[in-house]
Image 1 (cartoon, rainbow, N blue to C red):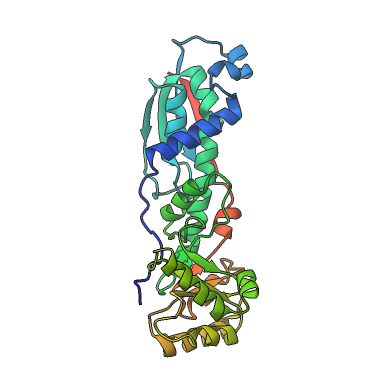
Image 2 (image 1 turned 30 degrees about the horizontal axis):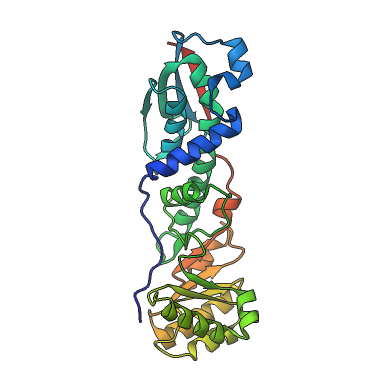
Length: 310
């Protein structure tokens, strides 16, 4: 069998080019193109273009949570005021308490005010994802299950949102449709069966010169699980997904797979996972639990930016 790849789990920094791209895109939404401070008519008319007027500020957490998106927030402030002094007090992945300082600033008054909401949008969105991910990770502590994300991300923000998941202690599923094969219900229907779909995917990987491609197949019933196992080694898929199964049925599926294939097939639970149910799902013995809600339904992390005269 080819080696199993269960996704990335390193909360490394976002690439500089990704930060630059996302910062510019976000600022263009607020200021238009080309990006210029004068486009903010409120700041322009109320504060004016006095380059000598400076302020200092602090971004504060208003709740307990996990920080993510610092590079993006810093990038926003630096893009509008390259001379600003920006000092993070924590790092991505750090857990902060209520009223804890996240970032300290000193720079041009108008630039900081213009940058405020864009920077906070990144920190609040990504901090919310990191925080809810941490809640799920904590809930399965002591089991073998790992929490993984899905492709249910905000268009254009997948790299940033995946980074936030890693900051929260989760791991990454396939990044896009070119990374791995994930055979779902409609693929199975079109192919005429789960086993046939897997065989076609394996043939496609060989033909394309990509024999190490991860092949995963979703199942909804024990009969489908048995159908996949009937392929025999080495024709098994690398991972079997158990979709929307009850915990009782899921436990049976895990037992069947382990009896037939041992640890050679990774097992993933998916579909409708909530914080109240994730511990019991982990108790069935699955290796992975994929949760779309950690990216598509994460509440924003509460924080604010307070300014004062420098």
